[in-house]
Length: 517
Image (cartoon, rainbow, N blue to C red; front, side, top):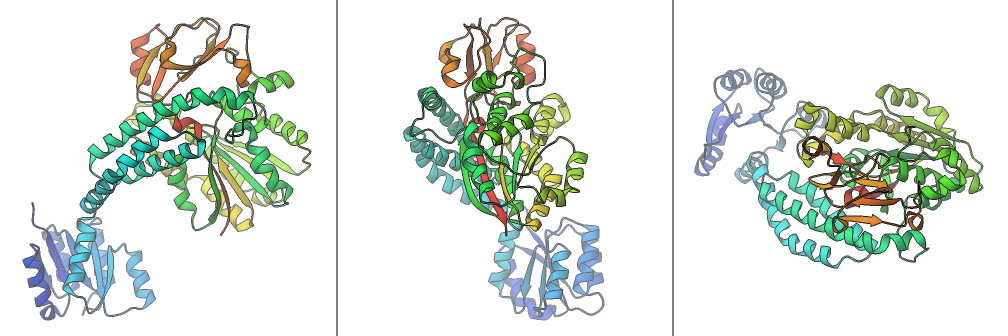
């Protein structure tokens, strides 16, 4: 292993002799100098791994030396050491991107701990994370085997999502592979759970039925409106639990979590079905029956989500809610910033419903644009991309404005997405739907053991275009492909993020209520 090189800059080098000897015994190579200009020249000549820098020195101050060193080698970690605890000095040092800040007198053990924290943090995190995850492996496996209620599945999904985020920080790829296999096992078991319960939940008011798409507004939004507090109901299209959690950390300074739950998306997990049901407060078949002018079937060429505002208005009307409300769909940065300019007007409303299409657009772009697909080859990079969008988005700025205005926020999504791997052949006619995660039509030919099938759509609130219509859903990471041009379609869509089917990622959705801090 290469020896770590340290540069220690202090005008009282003589008093550091014991520290230097201690570090040498621990295997570190340490150079010293007494002035900022000397340190800058040494950094130009030698590739140091870390610098310990005194604040008070003759000539260049520690802060100025730090700035010049960063101009030469921006990535080198610098630890500021000073006798002063004055806040303005600390702020200046932190603003110059120091790696740590120590107050004199400094003990050798403090220096060693700082070195380990900064230089070995990757290895330490990997070892610690790997050790704890090995202990958790058996517990998660047991949860997969025994989960039988929506609450238990919620806990399991949160546990898997937590470990996904933790193992992203680790360099141990073998543990990530173990977790991926556990995720596959969980989705297989979840598919059976849905197959055993979904029809019963939808066809009857079962006591164990979870909160589902059509009930979200009546159960969670309308009660807030009736209390008289302004509500911003925000739907981020195609957002998974892990994507939401990556965003939530950026809100801690402006919003406080009041409640955080998971609800169940109806099937198919697509905008046409799950989001229309969310706004209408009705299952798709009921929308088709009561308001046929607002429902567009799969084989029809019209846009499938053009009537959301009308469906929302009808839902409010049926609930007897008379309030001042708005609906906005945001698909571009410019639209988002234009909406933010109207924040005073929005805060005067009782209800503002906002749909942000960015995550869904990123998902489609990842499938269609090779550069984005190459950049986001795994779950970690895909998560990073969506998080990057959020922190630079007009949505984050809107949340700051809403918080300042004192309004309540409820954030959710209409469905999630899953990375597909295994193709399944399906044969259908011209009117069979094109979605890769579900198919609906009258002449479907498929292996029933591989899918979740619904042969009586009316029982689960799904429209029937004719008397022999049925629906089939891919489970886990499967996707449904017609025989025509089979190899090309499989190659093009494998490893893409899709939605419409049965998986934890698509159906178990975050529903979070926030209020200003």
